Length: 206
Image (cartoon, rainbow, N blue to C red; front, side, top):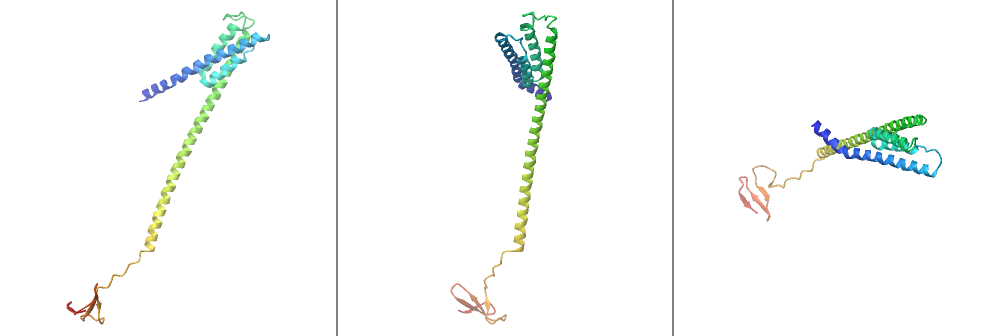
């Protein structure tokens, strides 16, 4: 179970990681083009701010891996295209301190950008977790309040029915004693009039 989930997660992260490294190469290439353009149109000794921006952007979007790749590529490009002897990977002793300073600044930019990105991701995850917790607690509270309202409403209906029972209708008299004494003639009501019965239940008249 754990192995399969790890493999699936790695497969899902593979395209994004590949894109991050490709984006790093694109950032360094853009920095090279910008710096070459500045050198063509300006006599000022080339500055490498574009490569620092490429390192920061690579670390921000890709993390430590693309950030370190950007540091290495930027160092090679700067040494090859801008430090004498040109178009050589062996720096001169005069420009070696400048190359070392560039490497140190690029490493610092990579570490700072990656750390800032990691802190931002941690804050975002904490915020998302807090939102999920708030939604869960809100739903639980709403369900609990709904259940309490239903329980109170049911008890109120029961109390009302117990305190105010429905009135009972009197049953229609089937027979009425003629003089209120038992054993004598009875007068009963029928659909067509009144019938008289004697004490033994026999009809004696209308």
